Image (cartoon, each protein chain N blue to C red):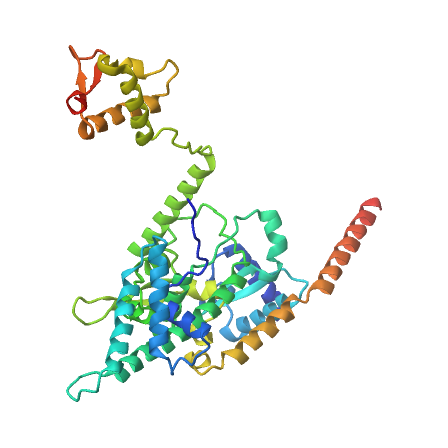
Length: 245
Length: 216
């Protein structure tokens, strides 16, 4: 299966709109609403085509854009509380403000990047005369302290835990069902016993998948399982005789 | 006790404390008036500004602390083997920017400005101690008002909230000249190639001197 990866990510609908406005090299205060709405909807459709969940905020904005576009096309109604210009002006205000904060967040990021390079030393632990030190503890700092401890513990555990191997699933129920169906067709009326489906060096995983496949087949494709008493092998028959006759 | 000596003692106190030490605590420990301690602090600050020093004086509001110089981080991390520190996510930075300029502010107001839900970003900022509960808004539901903390100032390298550029700097398109200013100061810091060379040479000669001393 091929995956399409979009490298652009947006923090929200406003972020996407600003990106579109920037791409089209248009003034934020003079948005051609039809063009931008179309491009916005196209972007959302692309995401949906890629099987991505589109956050509800994006859909809400799509509705707002369409409302502005629709109202702009209709003749002005005096009674209307907000006409398309008001709606658009409100959106523009929001965009302008968001853009400023985006700018500030970039400025913060650059400052943070510098400060990440500063190392502070923790106070050395020296047993103190605790009687002389008044303990000032508020619930919030206690919580912070506790979280820090938990975090440290987690990091320690991660450090000692051996790397986990992720094992690929070797057997799928679909494949197993096809396999069992073939075996049953070959066996004909005699059917097969469950133990016959299990080859000598079978893995536990394959046994489980085989059993699950059988259960699935009983449910969907008419399979008869016969067992004389509990805890012994059982016989598997296809119930297709009637159809074939 | 002259001012130089006082500066030395302050340096010792700050190194020993590790944590930030407030001006009033320093005055109490040193039994000196604020003016004298401040003067000594200024000597210390000037001294640290030299490229020959790997430590800097960090001031957050009324509290003083020592840290290594960010410019030298590239070398320091070689020895400390710190896990690479990661910065805040874009969502967290946007949220923090809004809280910093609109504080005290409710989550709802942040959501509205960003056009998306900010609850997880706010939780991360709370966890990192960059924002805190700053009271309640007297409105239905009494929502929490968030404000920035001293840890925020430290993270961003500000001495106080007053040092944060005014909102107008960003809103009136002045940020270009502002960015330029930032860039210039950055390049000023980073033209260290000759400085580095000097440092290496200095280290070498010092090493030679030590060997000579040992030989004698």
